[in-house]
Length: 343
Image (cartoon, rainbow, N blue to C red):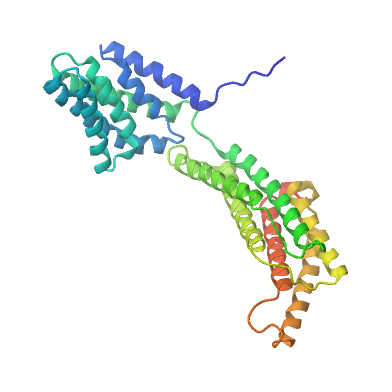
């Protein structure tokens, strides 16, 4: 049997807002179409966004209504009326920086031309009433019907980002430490996808913070949300170190085969622990970190004793080890925030 995908909460809330808005307008003998349009576009990801944009959409809609009334009184129901009402509404909204209300205001201005036949002033005030109805209903529905909760989605995305980070580490260090590569060429596509996923998750965190003004998180929910925020910061920093590696040349590295294999093995174990949390073992992770730190200081001493050989910049071996040690430390902190996933 084919799986049927149920509508999301935003679709359900939009339907509820449309029904209530249209019902109220019909009770008041107002044309519901304008109120319904306002209600549809006012269902935002958070209650806070609904209120903020509603404050902008109300005056914008009033501007569109005023232009519709003005030009229909001069030119009647004509192509020139539609054009002037729309163009003047757009120019005025842009000038007043009412960008969030531009679409609704423009639709209102052209739609009103068709329905205004007499009593222009009454039509203007009715339009303000329908706008207010759509805004109030959509905000109330957003607040009380299936209130937004992004925590679960954020947690899912966090795990996906960790998995993609593991793949990126595996790919980057595999290419860098491949003896057959004189010049390392790393595809940027993987890290670009990782950056987009991080940005989207950061946006969801912002939504949840805004929503908490109206539906505060308490107890374990608040603790969990704070944990996922800190975890994402760790993953973003790891992404930063991976990006540093991608934009560094490692063509002149002089690691011995033994050290090269040891570093590659450490990177692969690190990647595996991010791709599959159950593979993170604190004891083994600490041992790898100590081993890498030892290699780093050994090469640092080599640089110090050979100042004439490396007068102006760090050797690529030091850069590679520094970035890997930094990532190891960040992964350790990441799993301290997620103790239920480690062994």
